[in-house]
Amino acid sequence: MTYHDIIGQMRNAIDQNGAPWKAIDAEASARMAIQNRFPTGLDIAKYTAKIMREDMDAYDADPAQYTQSLGCWHGFIAQQKLIAIKKHFGSTKRRYLYLSGWMVAALRSEFGPLPDQSMHEKTSVPALIEEIYTFLKQADARELGMMFRDLDAAREGGDEVEAKRIQTAIDNYDTHVVPIIADIDAGFGNAEATYLLAKKMIEAGACALQIENQVSDEKQCGHQDGKVTVPHEDFLQKIRAIRHAFLELGVEDGIIVARTDSLGAGLTKQIAYSKEPGDLGDQYNAFLDADEVDPANINNGQVFISRDGKLMAPKRLPSNLYQFRAGTGVDRVVLDCITSLQNGADLLWIETEKPHVEQIAQMVDKIRETVPNAKLVYNNSPSFNWTLNFRQQVFDTWEEAGKDVSSYDRDKLMSVDYDGTDLAAEADEKIRTFQADAAKRAGIFHHLITLPTYHTAALSTDNLAREYFGEQAMLGYVKNIQREEIRQGIACVKHQNMAGSDIGDDHKEYFAGEAALKAGGKDNTMNQFAAA
Image (tube, helix red, strand yellow):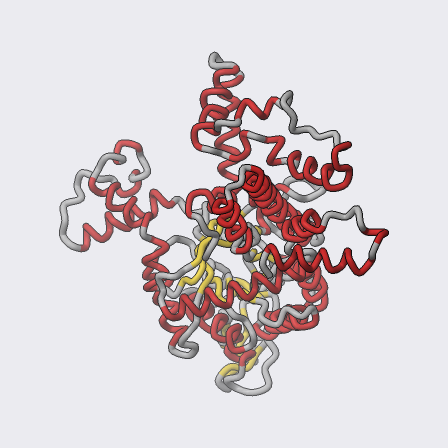
């Protein structure tokens, strides 16, 4: 509905209630309704799921239409990211948010900082989703509030053309509320536990849930050692549980991202159940590292399986885990991905040990032989040393092509001594185009960085501490932060406005009229930034 339609709706409601409601201003009520476009998390999940589905279709038609996100560990960080996107690009189209389980564990647990092993409170994940969307809705309310003030000024000045322009902008307002891909880790328990947590996350606003095929109580960060996977049927139960949660809550087009850690996981906790040769359980067990057994030489405590008519003993470690055969990671990844897509997942996530387009593409090519429209969410992880990885990739390419690389030490390419070289320049260009190249060649629909704002917070705080507590003292803050906020038009320079002071003033006026005691008068020091 248009701005005028909503005003009319409010006016009708007021008129129907007669004299008791005569003091209510219909336009003020309409403005408040417009500023709170998404009353519930389910409203957000339904709205953003539709956006993701449209973006997935657009990517299928043109891989250049890939999507991106940054991981955010606080609602304020997410809010500032979306404000910046709107400021710099004019639209939030194809820009999402990512909620990292790693950052929840490291920054949001009541236990304090924890490793990425699903030891944090499971309710902290939906709580962060709700917090993020609270801040994004507040960004909408703040920006629309300023538009309403501009509209009033145009009307008071008799500028009908400007008033019409602002009303059109309000009618076509581009919200800060965007899709969030939220990490449910390995489900925090069995399929029932996964279902219950999924419901909480969806009710908080998540339209896309990412789940991995590790053992829940053995979960490790995807970029650390010691990962243990589960048989396919165990994982598929959790995919079904998430789909049931989406359907139960009326988010029919909710998105499931199935992550496989099999490329770096050499262990399993279970031998899969198999009914007949070639079924899914048998395929999983075929990857086990096993030796043929001599019936005359059986050891105490051995476990046996039948494979191709032979009695085999899988290698079992003292941890009671079973070992996969070396070199089977890629084949296990491909089977994981195909099986997930055939059983209700919408997108894939392949956790790799390095950012290499061809490595990813070769796996996707095999998956697409069975599922032609398979597409990925990919972690552009800060756990990768991007500079070293890409410099080494360029070095190897040059060496294979017969180019002289004698002036470079492959093991020391991270050194600042190489920063001005042709090799470094080519590597940086490959980093710059990595997302577009991988979207085109390797089926990556969505690129995300899991932990970027964790690192930016650490870097900016380190720089401020060095300057402020050093010789620069107050100038360290003023020169490097406030002055740059003013000159770059960072909204937070007016921190009272960002925290909702002007929204509160508007509400006071709606509720109290001329009796309102407002904070934004002439003595508000934020007026010093009026020209910012």
